[in-house]
Every structure is written in C-alpha cells, then in structure tokens.
Image 1 (cartoon, rainbow, N blue to C red):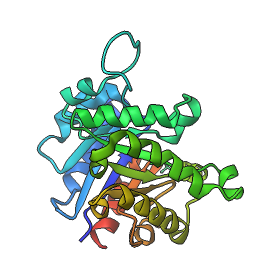
Image 2 (image 1 turned 135 degrees about the vertical axis):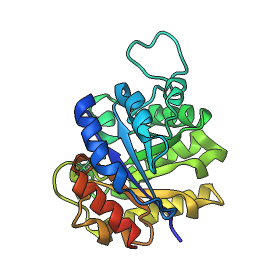
Image 3 (image 1 turned 45 degrees about the vertical axis):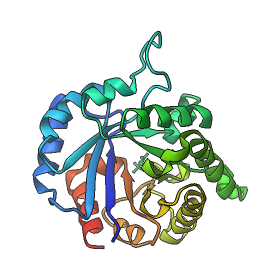
Image 4 (image 1 turned 90 degrees about the vertical axis):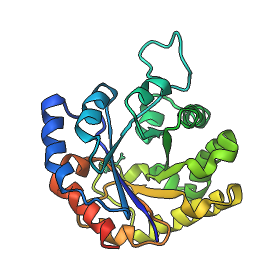
Length: 250
Ligand code: PGA
C-alpha cells in the first residue's frame, strides 16, 4: 500500500501569529495514521516555531530551500547543517519559483539535493515544464533532464529522494493538470527512477500545481501519484485537511 505524503508549501507567506493560528487549526485534526505523512515547508525564520509547535504531533516540517554550499562566505544562504538544527525533515529543492526568479540551474538543484541528503534531510526535488515547453511538446524531455541531473549527482541515494512534478503553468493559476496528464508524466518519472534505483517503487512522486479540496481525490487515485505539494490550499486549514482526508480515503 502507498504511503502518501501531503506537503504544504507556505512560500513567502505568514508571520508568527498567523502561523500559530494556521497550525492550531490543522495539527489537532491530523490523523495519527501510517498511511499518510503530512508536512509543512515553511520560511526558514519560522523553523524554530514549527519545530516547537509540531514536535510530538503527526505534523512534520520542512524548509523551502537550502544552500548548495556547506558553510562560509555565502551571505543570506541557509545551510543544511542549520536546517538540521531544527530537526527539519524535508527541504524543497528546485521549486520552479527558484529556477525562474533566482536562476537556479539543474546543476545547482542537484548540489542542493546532495547537501540535504548528506545531513539526513529528504530533498523534495521539484521538476516541471512551462506552458511554452508543454505546447512545444517538450514536457517529457524537460522533466527528464531536470531529474537526471539530480539522479546523477546523488547516485546510490536515489531511493532517499521525494520527487514533485509541478507543471509551471498549473502553479498558483487554478489550472490543474488533469489526472491523466499528471499520471503520464509521473509514469515517465517512475520509469526513470526505476532505471536508477532498485527501490523506485517506494520513491514518492508528488503532484503539485493548484491541487485543492475538490481535485485531490482524482489526482491521488492515479497509480504513480503518491501525494501532493500544496501551495495556496496549504494556507487554508479546511482545504488542506480535505486534501489529507482525500489521501487517507484512497
Ligand atoms: P499551488 O502551488 O498549489 O498554489 O499551485 C504549488 C507549489 O508551488 O508548490
């Protein structure tokens, strides 16, 4: 049986008081279930807060980025060591907003994934095509290339990854990939992981991009969709809990 992962991505939203309210509205309602893992990926300054509020509850936590460097003169960067001080379980790497607005290349993303793994933090490796790439028929090639860079870098640790397929055109737009569209890409990524790891079946491939309370069940029902990376809906307790419930009901 699949063990789903439903991970919220708060992006650059929230402050202490609002975070506390949001977590208070979600955490007590999470099932203590072995079938679904639930996490929130928060801005780095709030890792201490989420650690304090969430430890001892079923809610896991993660960060949204990590430096590709180990330590030193990299002003503004946050290292994997620093994340592990707050018992950070996951870190997003290669989110399209980082690739798009911060010029992160697949090589940088791969280095970040490697840094996280070296400190026992699970990288959630985000891949996805733009609308232009989809319309040009390049979806498969783009996502394969993005994932290949990470696979090559992390070598024997491939099975420790979480992968998130996030079509850029579906992020924050209210336009979701249909379950069939998403499954096609997930199957492709699974095949790529299979070629690199004997444990590819247990690698979780999340879908992200306008997943919400009403479309979650049909997306999560797909054979190669093992969870969701949830942006906007992770800031709405009812919606986020509904997505968790949809995973539980599979
Ligand atoms: P969205 O964001 O759910 O708001 O589309 C998903 C993401 O960017 O991780």
